[in-house]
Image (cartoon, rainbow, N blue to C red):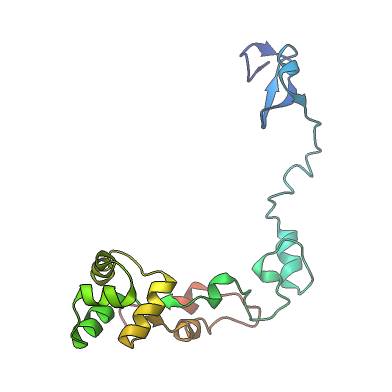
Length: 180
């Protein structure tokens, strides 16, 4: 005997229904509260999020696979590009760079804010490292102070030059040992 997931009564043959987006096993009386769901065969029940070995073996052999996994790149060592590849990364010491450049130019925080047409409180927060400058403010700061606040993306990419011809990496390709 199975318990109805809606009313709690015991039922020998529960019905699978969808009630407000949730699939429940309910008794015959509670079936009217939802729409009946057709039972799927057990072999296709987990195909949506399947991680079976057949998907990974077809991807690594160079064949086209609809799973979208990174191993289905056809043996190429290039990784997929995304929107973050085109973005400049802000340098970690941007706050110190802005402060030292402003001080060497002989400007106060208020002077710099007035020149950039921004609030002085924003300059204070940027110099303390409390906030990241928007792309627009970053461009204004770089222009006014003649500094570069972007971290070079090419240095980080060179760290990922390891790996074999299939484009797969191991932990040994990326780890930095502290004792060496």
